[in-house]
Length: 438
Image (cartoon, rainbow, N blue to C red; front, side, top):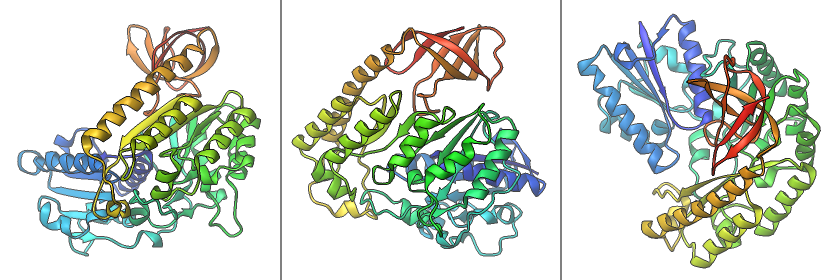
């Protein structure tokens, strides 16, 4: 029996997909990359914002057609979409055989084998899941890079965010389990470990006794000097000096700080449920840069949040120009009736939000170009990711995270994928670099 799995959404979802595939292979299923050849199709969905919901539904409907004109006999939907919309999905998507919520990933083999015996929709409380040692069999999406999930869920209450409802409260994995998985991944050839959670820098605060993130990082760093360790999804309120110093003191921990701030207006931050101010933000990024001189800063911004005035937007734009982030993602506020922010007054017209999005992206384009030009003439280790043919390779420096940032193009011959090489940067554009192998 052949099985195809489509994984949508963030890196945290990808880890769930890789773990499900490991369980399915262990149960005797064969994995195919072509859905047309699959007997069973699984879609691991995202529903974080409206565009993710639409992508999930479009993917489900497209793959559902294969039940009529392909070999597919069973369609299973997992993850955030059924968790968010629950039993209502059963009627709206009759093509689907089984819906599994975020607390039911351990039932994927039973669902694929048609042995679940709980009806079409299984939505146990995600808070009851124990995140201990991961199974040894995990189907990695990359041979040289792996995401390492250190916690599940989130205990914060940002008014625009549905994650706590979908994933439950924060449950940190014990450091011994994480370090054990890191050893397995590194021994398998992984060159870059990317630590992720909903609130990664808040890791360990719920353990008894608490385990600070920097202690975990030190243990992973000691495994090998020949890897990169990267941390994504930090939070302003949980980034401590000890974490910053640990990044500065270990050469195999990338000097890369991913800190989604969401906004810089004190008024909007308060409405968002973010418990910090613009002054806190200035102080944090100044501290990072003074402690880690080569630090790369990345953030994410929401424009068009309810109540955002022209003055609030100008405050945000000024802040972006003051900090000069190396990488920045901008999102237009996504509204939904099940969000606390939906009840706030002063919803922004879509056209105004789009205009603010475009203006902020134009500002960041200029900043990114100036930042990238500073790398010209400098030498960096890069991780080779892909051969593009004609001796052209795609690679990344420590200040370029996969998927979300730019890449470094290099011309050379016979470079092994997943290897580190030294390059000199010769050209720079708004997002990408070009270099020469030394």
